[in-house]
Amino acid sequence: MKALTKYWFLEGFNLFKKLGMVSMMKICEILEMDNIEKGDPIKYSEKHKDSIIFLKKGSVKIVDSVTKSVKYIVKRGHIFGELALYDKEAAKLEEAYALEDCIICYIESEQMENLMEKHKSLKNGVLKIYGLRIQKLERRLSDLLYKDSATRIKEFILEYIEEFGKKNDEGQHIANNLLSHKDIANLTNTSRQTVSNVLSQMRKNGLINYDINSISINNNQNNYHI
Figure 1 (cartoon, rainbow, N blue to C red):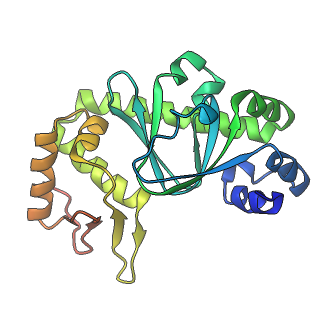
Figure 2: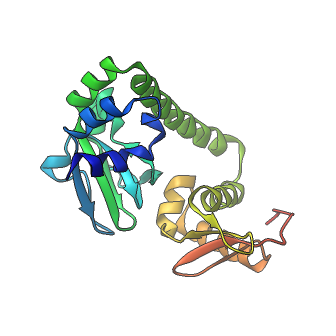
């Protein structure tokens, strides 16, 4: 891939906002690019092993390789695999799967460490991403202790639509329906049956609409009670 094309690839990432074009072009020289089809694993292959991955297009789910449960979702413009910078053994227990067709760039963790030592803004940016991910996991633990299953599922669904969706011409938030009921159950520490029941109740109450392709929040809903 030409350096200018790689530059375009990285330009949309907040992580590189403070780097000049010269530094960006040098980084582009060591990046590799790949296309991943929907449903395919990303970190099984040898070339993606111990790599920091930049997601330009699509969405990815990160899965615990032991329990096979979903840990978190990554959307376009974000990175994953950064755990390899801090705990290589723990990073080996993570797998990534494309929820839709994806375009990625990747760099070996050792090369990324070298870049982070040279560019403080890059180092701080990665640390911030890692910290936010830990905060989300801690919040899930807190929710498990203090919120019931229905509330956890409802809040997750609404946040998912707002984070991964876009507003249409009518101002309605709508997102691709990428997650299975099992995935949602993993992310909310509930069961598939409970997820199915809560989603059905949310639709019955007119809070959301969904089908096999999309899920959306109804505009006329100000009351989020299930």
